[in-house]
Length: 310
Image (cartoon, rainbow, N blue to C red; front, side):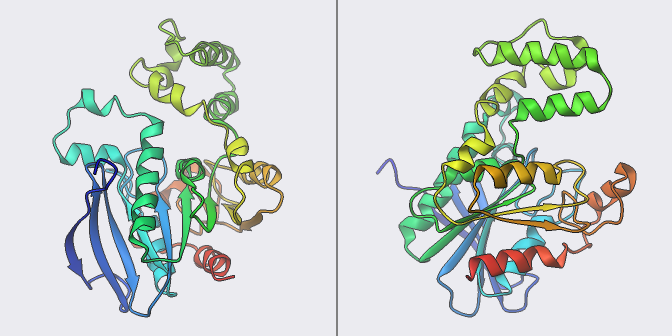
């Protein structure tokens, strides 16, 4: 049947970080490969972890940025008797299968949502877990909101933006003090919102509005995190760190305002990659982005586990 997902268990290992955890690597579709962690103690609960922006793998890593944030998160949660599934972003899987640059550039934001929905559909169809939660980190927060179905028991946003991506980019440009670029960016975004490419964008914004990137951003800006979160009727936990220099606690406040019955947790000194750091100074803060042995802030998993086990 066309709607059935191809499921292949490609390995079975008990070699995970947690002593009482079983790891299964799964291929759910041509674009979805991930790791299911199962506690040895019987559980009926699963948390699906959706990674953030960029070519991020199931562990929260990129080529030149290895911090194992999502790997530690999965292990910390599974250690407490909750199964977890985390997976690689689509582009990584495509590259592994030999996709060329032209094919990678055709990936859209909606493809990430489609992949997340397929993961949810798979686990729902297996009926192995009575309760399923979605955890979205950074960009994965918005992806997770859009992937929620009637069979999801709760949603958890970690370092998720409250503003749409165009407003976030405008804020970042303004913080640089480049007022002329702000106005140029606004004009380009207005053109993109009509469904058109802006071929005459300000050259000073080439790293943002490259012609190959505009179709992806065009798709992404069509979604408002606050509007999407407000649609959810399930229990929701919003988490942010005070030392996150990419997504500030103000973004978490926006999400909380959009869904007043949600639970908001602000973790002192946690940064964007879920580590405890002493400073917001970018040079100091980002050192932890490439420290694969540094564990996550302990309070993060504790808050998530408490929310799920309510």
